[in-house]
Image 1 (tube, rainbow, N blue to C red):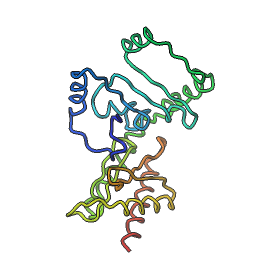
Image 2: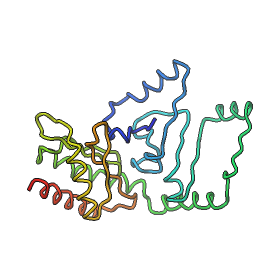
Image 3: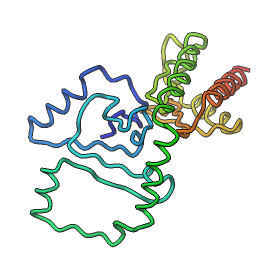
Image 4: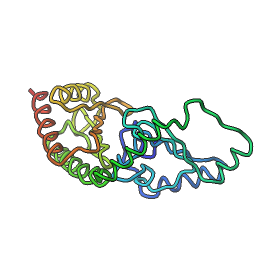
Length: 223
């Protein structure tokens, strides 16, 4: 499972929920695997998404952000699980452990630290989320705005009273923002949640520019 429920629109998860869920899974003899492909490597303002939602998984799998475009993936687990696996099964992969992938993976880690990108994701993400939350009260078509670091969701609705999901509005807003230079998309059960995931180097100035473009698009669609 994704620890921040990214494809579901990054809902606000009650405090303690994920820890209790982990306990229930363990009680039934199961293991919890955190899919950190979207939420890991500083995206939420923490190294890992599970830190943002307050639990400790048994396994962590990650991929795309590790190589910054070069194919690279990894699985991490507690030593007891790895030792038990190795005692029963040999693992071999023709494409594993290449020097190129290793060099790229190390370079990504170095750049995250050198540019202090995790702190930047937290600070700029908070600025952007606050700005979008301010707009919820100003426009009845915005049902909610929420996020964790630089993973932000804006829920589009037909009106503030019924809060009926508006997938067409989310799609149109997504297209208009692309025309203004901001690549976004939409997700959620009803496809009405605009998902905003800028690069980790996104600056405070970039955030202000995005909010201006967001306002312009909303005004254009009202006309």
